[in-house]
Image (cartoon, rainbow, N blue to C red; front, side, top):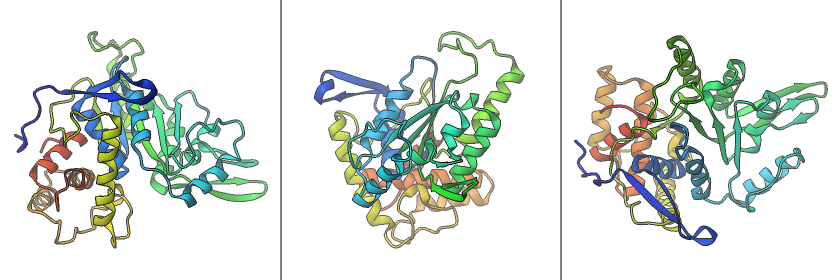
Length: 329
């Protein structure tokens, strides 16, 4: 059981002020919390849900909640976009870019080309948000190239004029349906053969293994709301700004800028190496969780502590992080 009693309702309706006044974005509490955690800690996010769920609005909410870029980063990104006159510049100056591509996008558009050297979507989304829709349907070679780019944080193109390396430090949002069946709905069983279903799940795993946050919109369990309930998008953005400031203070001197960059072998300072994190390490040492699960859960728990304003993660933060990553703790 969670130490903090979750709300009775497992959905939150967040009002959208401004020109969209009167509208509400309703999603499971776990999904809204995952978006806030991703905006604060820079974590990759995987959203799975049937047709008709709010996968795309949540991805847009993540980009809107992200903090404005420093002037140097904004100028560098603007210079990169000048190499792609075929792309529209829609976001306000200084705001992180939201770039969306689905499985029908050509590899050259996703990854760029070296003849001549032109950036792809992975570079246009640098320091911004890249939405990769229906990741289970991507071509295996394209998915493998995207996975390599995620691991390296950059991509190198080779052409007649030599080699050129573009940055690719984007925040990924992987969206997908539970299966590859096009007509799959929440209240209808899937008719896809088991072999095709396994292949679809394996293809999804090629990319979603990088996600610290894995939210199933169809079956999200109740969870603590971390003061999100009752706020509109402006209030949630203020919550994200305050948590981001606390996160930067916490990580100062560790050589990382975001909680998503923490490694499993990076021992937390004694100030916030709490009994909850020590208990999680004991589970790792006893082979009850994998290194990847430990790394993701500890990263997310640190971000949750920043949102809650705690010196370090407590047991509620660790267990909620397990829910957000899809691990039963």
